Image 1 (cartoon, rainbow, N blue to C red):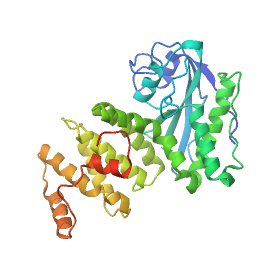
Image 2 (tube, rainbow, N blue to C red):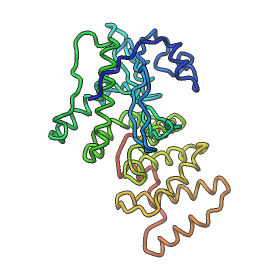
Image 3 (tube, one colour):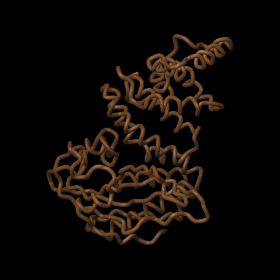
Image 4 (tube, helix red, strand yellow):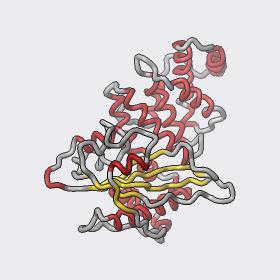
Length: 335
């Protein structure tokens, strides 16, 4: 277990300077800190870069926020802790009665090499998210979790800088360990930890026809999964197809719809997973329509569909990409 990270509390203004390059935290109307005077724990230094020219997956908690009210529980359990819109919705809809507090940990996911990852991605998680992950893995693979220390719940002093630093170090070590053990890394419990809140929120937004808000959540989640799993892993390709569907089902396609569609087509070359192949024809049909909208040459896509048709594969009148995704992995979005 990594030694505790001492850390310290900083003001919102200090955090804005430390994380400059984006918008100010307190000036962001959608920020979870809006209208709150909150305590922020900040990591004293970043994790060292790997040596020998290696590229390594890195989990780091650069800061944590103490928020003043406990979010109201949702149907999926703990709604808070998801990034972006999901966290904002959970916090702003919660009651401040009783003055309860909770801590949100910003989990930075990076692929560091001789230089820091130029495109780090973050998710926000609570202690309960980590505890749910630990309990799920311990039930599934008890022997693999025997030597893993996990911070216990405490009744008093939950918000001291020392305790937050200790928990941050333990959480980083826990995630580091998971990704080194294939059976833990590939578990549904870990995947739920990485994408569950964001994916439920994105599907809810898609159901409400608010694709423009769902797409950023799906993009962020895809980038996280793409750092951890192989390019053609089922979870990565499924999320990528869900992103393409979200980008292309609006009356006006998302500005980056072509980028994600082209990436999905490249990733689908030589895919052998039978489950995922059911998405290929709907993906081709989606790209064909998108290319037509953008005035692009569609001959290559048409050739691929013709080849499949000659093999007796049904290429017309099938499900849309969103419908095929929903059949493969049912969620809340409208089919």
